[in-house]
Each structure stands twice: as structure tokens, then as C-alpha cells.
Length: 160
Image (tube, rainbow, N blue to C red):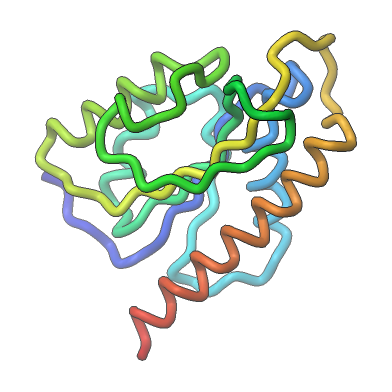
């Protein structure tokens, strides 16, 4: 098992070429421009995959921002604390198997991470493009605010 550093890893998942599907990456890019405490790491996770496993193993807490193709209206945000693949929204977008498999492998390796998922509902039927729609841009800003709440909570536990 990899030695755990005391940090919070903010992982933005998504494909920037697929418009709103890239919302997690857009949000993490916004966070990267902020002055966050040194214990906080931001990472563009792209479309997920096992190459993210090592970084995840080194984190004490994970906050994952991702798009979901749920039944809710586009721009709806769910804040979840999933433990198993079945705890995730039923239809994460293009990388749904990759992220679920990645987290299942993470648990199988014996890690019991504190994982938070901020899932933003999108319309999966959209044109290619690198821009977010206005409703998803607004949801991304709300997700960033939620992540900053997680940062405050994490740092409060670390330094209180």
C-alpha cells in the first residue's frame, strides 16, 4: 500500500472536446487558478483511467467533480459520498466504466478513502465543442463553491 500523504486531492474528470461532458475539468482548472493551501492538490483527470490510481492512493480525501447523465434537469448537482460503484449515478457519461472501475480497484487495494463526488447532470446529446453551455457553466461555479467548502472542512480538521 502506498504511504498516504495528508492532503485533499481535487480530481476533475471529463473530456473537454465534448462540451458539457468536460465540466469536471473546467471546474478543476478554475480551482487551479486560486491560492489554495499547500495540502490541497488539484488534478485534471481527463477521462479517468488507472493512471490516476497512484495520485489517489496518496490522498487522504478525494473530491471528484464529474458529469452525470441522470434524469435530473441539466445543471442539477448531486453531492455524494460513494463507497461502491453502485453508489454512483447510474449513468455517468463517456468514461463511466473507467471511473467506477478505478474506484473499485482503489477499494480492492485496501484503501478506505474519504471520497466525495460532485456530479453535475448534463444533457449527453450535444454537439462537439470546448465551451460549456450557460447552465452548466453556472453549475460548474456552484461546484467550485462546494469544493471550497470541502477545502475549509478539510483544513479545519487538519489544523484545528
